[in-house]
Image (cartoon, rainbow, N blue to C red):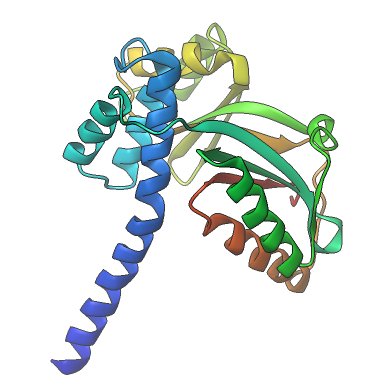
Length: 236
């Protein structure tokens, strides 16, 4: 019984630790989405996606509703979305997307992360042409629909590529088609697991397991920062 109790406690602590890191990032994403497109998810595709992502992370609905309400209040912080670019160990290129109310704090923290991880921040715009910004929507493959039919219908709404892996479909489109693609999927009665704007490397590189382990140490440092929303690399 003692070992079982310790296991359950360790499991809970792991979940709580994840929640303490993920939930504040989701709240920031909701805040930015509301400030940019309003508090109605039906009219705001980014907010609709943020809510879906919150659900995927098991964030309670009350927390989501409270975040939306707080984002419309006068007391809500002024968050800005900003991307930083850098190079990591073994020539890896890294994009870091942030939502911050203090850019001086954010850049100082990121520089520390890169320095400790064997990398460095580079001038903004240096890596822009090496990545493509894409809409990526994940959803469970429906049991009652043919994927060929879904693909044909979504092409009219910006779908560029559809991949299926372990029962999960990944719909890719240009970043400008985020709203139309997510709305089309929802209109087909398909609930998205996650919908995001991602930066995908145009020429990904391969690394050894040892080299990847070096890079992951830096990525872990970056992702632990409260201001960091997403980290992308050119590792294949």
